[in-house]
Length: 91
Image (cartoon, rainbow, N blue to C red; front, side):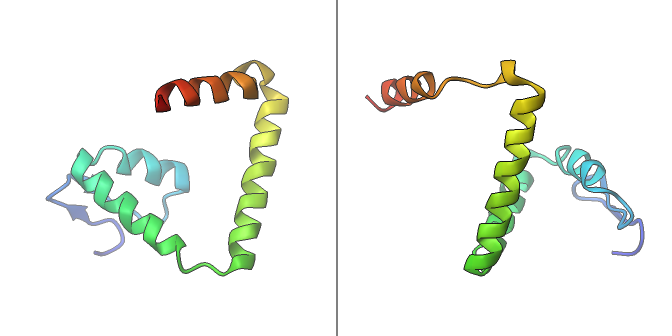
């Protein structure tokens, strides 16, 4: 596909100048089967990361989540509540 070609099968326009948020918004317009196929491919692509790359990504994600909790502490849930819900769903 060229700089801003149209994928007629999914009606989604791809533009390499898109930022991640714009790309995400466009991809969320795909039908569920296309999104599932893409998700599978993206997850498989992460399997090739080195242990160091994987550790770095998780450390950055933990920092991001911690910063989110600092900004909006009301959005979190207590661990005991989460574990109780998880146990009830498994039984």
